Length: 116
Image (cartoon, rainbow, N blue to C red; front, side):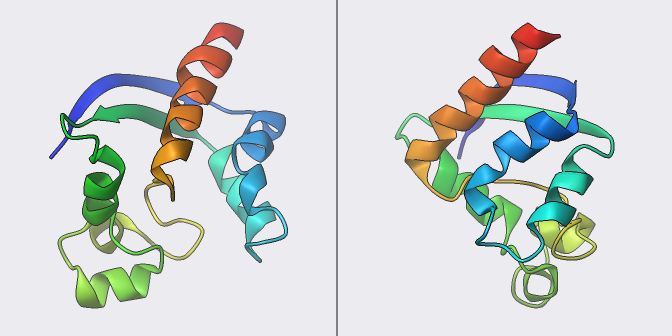
């Protein structure tokens, strides 16, 4: 399990969205569509914590697979199965690696929050 330790609503411009998703540039064929989606409306950023340090793994299970169709088939109670539309509009972003989680929290709650 995990707890929500911070939550804030953001509106990202294209440069901020591109910076946040830059690790996917050249890796994901839909990178530019993902950037478009991220800056198309409001974003709710969460900081999650778990006493045993497993918040990323725990939330990844809640989020479900990146592929919405796979999520619907294999994990029908996951966030992506319930709310995802396709590979770009998949309802939720969850960091791939636990060590990246801290960087993503800093990005939103220190860098972007201080620009507002």
